[in-house]
Length: 202
Image 1 (cartoon, rainbow, N blue to C red):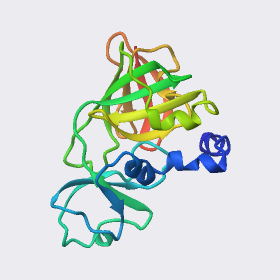
Image 2: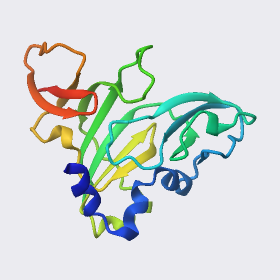
Image 3: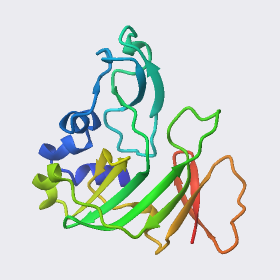
């Protein structure tokens, strides 16, 4: 129901905000639809063009060359984009003012193909400037969530961050294949989503 509610609240003319390929083009990134070759060899991220389910579903890093047929590596509903590195932050803006900034650290395992598994999220005390290209929708949607890697915007949501609604400053994801062992001082909160069953929060 959360996905349906999020989708329904968006006006048809504003659905572009969930189109990650369109946002990447607007921001001038090296990107393209599946079927178009990459311009030069390098590391790229392949992701769904739209993903209301979140959690980095099907996002994966891949080495590509201009001679590669991208359709051999991805679904038509996906796109490729240059691979960004650096700090991954999620920012909630309320009336264009940053009110919640959290930084995430990914869990890197050889068995994990998707870019969807996180080790920890921490609240930061910092201000982030509202992205100018979102001015046109800021009046209609008072709360806007923006995710960035190394200062590069990778996606936008017309809702707040759902993982810090308990007044917590830290959120450690707990996955379905893990036993519950809350660290000292942390409380377990059930919050199932995709491969995650909850969080340890503090």
